[in-house]
Amino acid sequence: MFNNSNKRTVLQLLLIVSLFLFSALLAVDIVLYRVNLATVVQGGQSTTPLVVGATPWVVGANASVTATTTAATFVRDAPKQYRVSPYQVDSHYTIRPAACNLSVNFIDIVFLIHSAPGNLEKRQAVRRTWGSLITPNCGLKRIFVFGKISDQKLQMALQVESDAYGDLLQTTNDDGYRVSSLNTLYAFQWIAAHCSETYYTARADDDVFVNVPKLHSFLTTKFGSGQAFGLPIGVGSKVFRDPGSKYYVPREEFPPDKFPNYFSGTLVSFPTNQVARLLFLSRQSATMFLDDAYVYGVLLGVANITISPQPAIGIGLEGIDKGKCIKRDMTAVHYVTVANMDKLWDDKCHRYEKIC
Image (cartoon, rainbow, N blue to C red; front, side):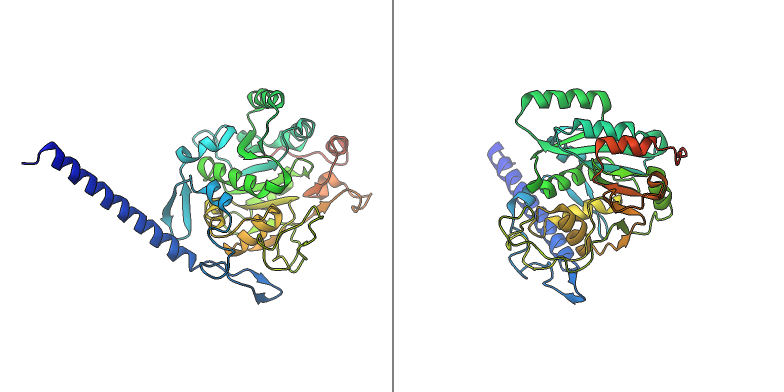
């Protein structure tokens, strides 16, 4: 017969063995997955592959990325498919919107709109114009994302705004331009946990005017294609090495001197079922603060997600033909002021048809 002391010893041994087996299986799974990582291609030639041991630009090169994502539980579901447990990630957000309730409304597209805590006027402009077409009843969901702040008065105002609209996602990561990639990964983590069954995620900024019916019509023909859509910058754009530049990228963050093909952040649409996988891949390399190039270039590249052009995306109103009905003909336009957001919305040249 075992006495209490012996029983405790046996239980402790069983626990140690179980933890060892779990760690070993997880390690094998990660290693097997890493060897399949794609190579980032630039100018038709392969650069250093993002695989273990290739360069310092791999696991552990940036602890903050690891800290961002390791709290999520990644579970093998099928080859190249991962899930994120909602119970593991919700502590990473100060303010959260309601999860996608697929039993009530199936969501086709989640709109992830990058904002800043103090940009209430811009968020209101989006809500009363093109964002007013984004409703769960029509299979669409709107989320504004930004990071944490120290201003308690503004924080209270954000909570009031969240209570009124239910469309804010505030991460526990600092807000700011230099940490935009990390806040994007936080947003991905929430989507992977709470809206993973949606078809597409569409990323935009709060100064972008989006033709929601045009985008919806386009993407509904692409469901299941596995492609990402946006405005490709093209292969070979120069990496800024001047420390005085707003776009300065240290070599430790990104060793190559030229970027791979990547999307402008104006509007990017990609399959939501790849979000958890992109999160997983982000743990294999150091992050880079330029989320356009890192998330919508490097990560899409290693995930083998095809970068495809989305028709009619413009950078600023100045370069668009004055005779064009922008509201009708363009899918998205960047750098639109609040006044111009209202002007475009009220333009009588076109009337949007209801999505549902």
